[in-house]
Image (cartoon, rainbow, N blue to C red; front, side):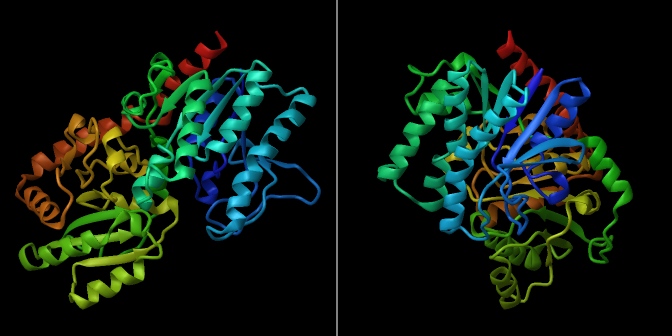
Length: 415
């Protein structure tokens, strides 16, 4: 089977990007399928652009997977250049597909991923015209996430247009793959189930490459005296330090713990525009139990997490969480066999399903503190059992297993 994967932001792992489609490609190629990833030449969250003078696309073999980097303008901020980039990729990616067709490389199936939805729109239209089946993956409920995180009204004219675009995409793709568990319910709640066939909806969660993760754990050790201190109960968070993650709540929790649970330490591995504010707040509170360690390379994540006692899954609680969440870091947390503390109340909680940690019901510093206190009262045997349950979660979401699910979807389209 010849498969084209279209994702505006499919950055290769070695460049610190979104790894889902790389792992799918690697495993599909191991099964004998031809796979090509089509992504924007401008690498998101970097200064790197693979654009070549006068070329519509730049072909590279990156980390063992063929990529076609589609010509797009460079940007570094959320300004007009990024908006132009978002409009440019949907047009140029169809041109690239046509050019590859002329060279004799025609896909049997196209696997699309959102956001952004604009490339999904242009490619679905092209595919329908040329009778190429499409599977569209929904990693973000867009524009609902814009409404929730940016406090924009559903009655905003642009938001209304985006909802209509979303409905058109769901209606016109051949299969719908949601990473979150509540995809069908979302369609029903939107009132679209009379126009969209729910039988074509499935879920394929995010996951982890366990072999690579274990290799990183063995070969890339991050020196950190604080993290190695055996006298602390260490709670580790990895990820962005931005406003939408509301890590101020974790600083407030650390304040409560300093007064009542003096052996607890918080480790924040990540960077972002909110880091300086949070560090200043910690100094104002005179906290000695929270460390802002900054950004680390992905290869060191396994080393850091393996030395935690509890891993922390935290972001802003918003309405869209009721349809489920699927964060890549969850599966990294699970892979180190440590209990997980989740502050996010979600639909069909995978943490509760696997009994691998504690998910709080109301997101505030007092509830988070009480959950940490609950962990401190558990026996080591109980914490170890949670860790074993977490590892089972990781095993069931190894990308080798998830690729089998994806292949079933793609084969059904060919059939």
